[in-house]
Length: 118
Ligand code: 5GP
Figure 1: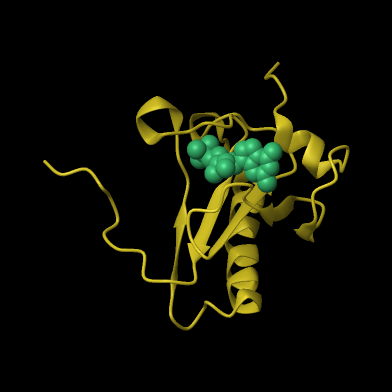
Figure 2: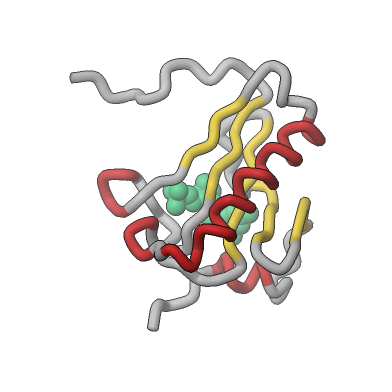
């Protein structure tokens, strides 16, 4: 049984964080440490620790994350200029919270996709 993270408490509103969106599958709220003018997290309500744990049963939820990202990007007014969706996995991916989530970042030019160089 995977261990809950702070995100489960936010989803259940045990930690009062303003929600930008919530339905039966996903919840969205602003990142506590924004890396761009607009930085939103879109999180499955179900605890899935990493992308490696995703199954076919999660496909509806993962699709919902994209449609919610699109809706929130429009509400943020960043849809036309563009934005980036990011999901990190495990150590090399830089994942810090082990409850999968999609970062929606934008509101300014974001530069190159990766900072590493070969
Ligand atoms: P990761 O590195 O796992 O892809 O991203 C985790 C993100 O969660 C980070 O951008 C971090 O700022 C954000 N975060 C961590 N704890 C909290 C919290 O308690 N509230 C909110 N709103 N964001 C959080």
